[in-house]
Image (tube, rainbow, N blue to C red; front, side, top):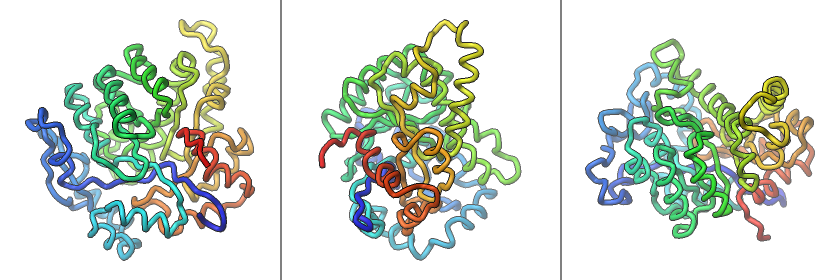
Length: 369
């Protein structure tokens, strides 16, 4: 609690350590176990996955400098946390510093692993079947094999208590989220009554990944991080809305996290305008404009310092926005994220209360007090 206000962070992170797959990977897939390579020159843990380095830029000399520039100001804050391997106790202590009552926990590097196009469906699913986070865990799945993804979603929610099912927003091996074969996954997530969450990564290995076009070119790290998260979320949102998924599954709650929200008014206006022009001739029909479908079923996350959120609220109201400080990532707001959020101009206190608490409860289905 901060200043008497209840707070749920929609998107905190675990930082996986080298023992993750040794401890938790199904023994049937030990032949495919990622090889932990230690802490990389870019100040990240990294792995060898079938000859591919994850994150792909972990040893890129051109990333070392920009990452040091990001990490240096907070090194005195994060070094002690890193020494504790980002354990649950240190996370709870960080939440107490910020005044966060509850948080939903997301993977960091495991999502990068399952972005590899060539993974067999069963191997990709095995990489998703995670370790026991202690703070409202969210389960990552992959559409390498949608039927296996549906089974893993069921296991994660019904047996392990996960509160959301998470997907990377980029295509996998040419399959995108509005492909008909993914309907089995959407049906299961709807039945489980948990949200589908799209959450990007700066370490995507997919061939069809927007930010990889910058690799090998000047200032890759800045362009990669600036573009990867919003670009891929925008495309996934278009596929879910215009591609007919939300239309076919009207009880499916969908969240688009860690890609900012300031672009939302323009993007929904663009989707509405293009649907008005072309939709009459499309094979799949929509019962409402994309923006209306979004407002009925979807949520988007803002950064704690994102002043553009005020314009989003002015255009669409304050019912569809949630918030995160993105701990423990160095580009997040910790240890002053909530203070920054509460100081944002243009957002009234009632809107801030909804964004910090009520909206997140509706997204995740937390209907208790």
